[in-house]
Length: 364
Image (cartoon, rainbow, N blue to C red):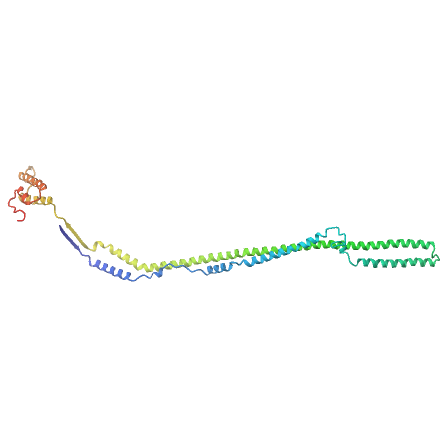
């Protein structure tokens, strides 16, 4: 087996470029990259977000005072409503006829001095009546008719009329006292109902205040939630903008750090385009010939030696020539090839068939 190599040296310029590229690559990759310059970072919370978080913390339980006050008003309303019952009960006791002398009767509303007033008034009436009766007697004496029938009639009529007047006066005073008592009793009834209504109104007002406080307790978180949402939203937008700035700066730092590598990569790619001109070594391996190839080679060589014109035919214009010797030599070669195919190629056996003698044989 034959081995052949062909060496093609690169041009001087290409060699310099390759050496320069190797030098730059070694120098660039020998220094580690400072990846902290383009490491991912998270933008800090915006001040509005911090304020929102503070409000959220402060708002937790902020409704509790309002609920406590609402509970207080509810308790007060219950107590107030409990005070309505006596007034209703008292008013119910004044719905009867008002007879008798017990509590709630008309007599209980009459003046305790009424009887004294009546007695004094009647005493004064009796006094005045006696004085008028005496005047009748004096008049009778003056005309000389004292003790007569006419005086007796006048005294009788006067007494009768005086008694009527006295009874009428007493009845009027009793009626007046009764009317006043009845009016006072009715007024007391109205007053009790009014106080009960006022007590109920007060309880309703206290319940209303409790509901108002409850509404404040519900409204407080809603208003605080609105403020928190607004602050969080605006703060989130500002934080997002800050994050975009950080990301852009990180990308810019990364591009700046990778620029030498990209430039060197472009440089190396350009050198790669010059690969066909970089030279190299080409290796050719020729395998040993087979027995048949050797036989054919010897046949060609020996045939050419014995008859250079074997198998050729010269043709001239107007003339055809047949080379008998050529045909004979061709037959000889054909027979030699057939014999070589069936036997081990041995020049000592092959050459006699070709008409060659004197071959020293193997090992000669």
